[in-house]
Length: 469
Image (cartoon, rainbow, N blue to C red; front, side, top):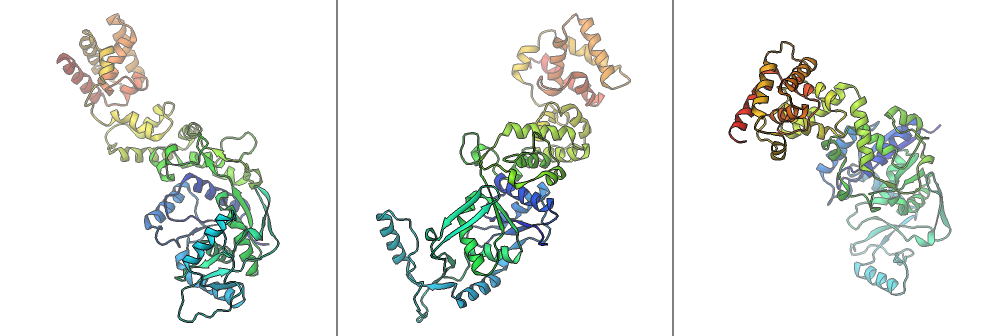
């Protein structure tokens, strides 16, 4: 029985974007569900546009998502000898031919076709010529596409697709410099990697009949194909940078967990009943290509944020803490002095949808307050604030147990003694501690400072208030 084998084959001309990541995920899940192989192929034959940085970005994105190839990645630029062997074979068998048409002739031909409202396509001028290459004339190699009949294949997602061979011209498979072209290298690689299922974006669907014809000419049975509809932004246009993050690793920097992004991507055009939450193992068990929608999917940031908060709350604490620490590193904040990050997660997980938001909203525990929010000061700081804060500091200094409950009792006592409402005490105190009035409950906020640091900040704010803020 043939092993199920899928491949993800990005071109390293840019970052790994979410559309590519979803395709990689679908390839991975399908292979794993049927105990097969998932392969990574770097299609880097576009030497002018391919960059080492883009290759590394693909590797980083795949590693962050946990989508690991079962064998070492294949680079097309390391396989030119294999492509040449197939080209030589096709020339010898009469399945391909040398084309000496000049650029000027081809341009004139296309202009004539356009004037007659015909589809621009090569006219087969060199197909039946027996020209030998005397004088070392430059030439390309073209595949002899069948001239009659249809290419028919049953797309797992889209159903039967039928293309007339009359619509397909003789594709160039080797350029004049000898380098192979995309559609040809894909065919050779899929043959030699024993790919059984090609799962890719439906922007490749026009390439499929050409690749099927070449594969059959070489004597091989084509793989099964599944073309995944594209992802659109909420404005109905193709997903791009203007809709948010450009690359997968942008989502990491924005504070998303890979588990959340994977869960979101698998549901972006696929469903399994009403289930919303999927671990990677759940996905492997349930994934079915036939359940992928034929329609484009709409990217919804709010849904991704909802899933991200779910995973912040539900993943093992050490997993979340590690990701949160990286967010503080991005901010340039040293967290070695301050509360444990696990305590930060506990008190902030219901307030934050991303770990970037959590880090930014928690930085006051690790950094001194350099300025107070003017709007908050104007609203909550009064002529009586210094006296109230002094009283709070005096009571807190007497505490022998620095914990939320004793701190809460102190605050309630100050409110009672001052004959003030709780916000009249709490909000100035929040400003003193954090610089603004956004924080978890005040007893918890205070408890995550050391007693000495809390008192220092309160006393410093009293001095600032005395000097007119």
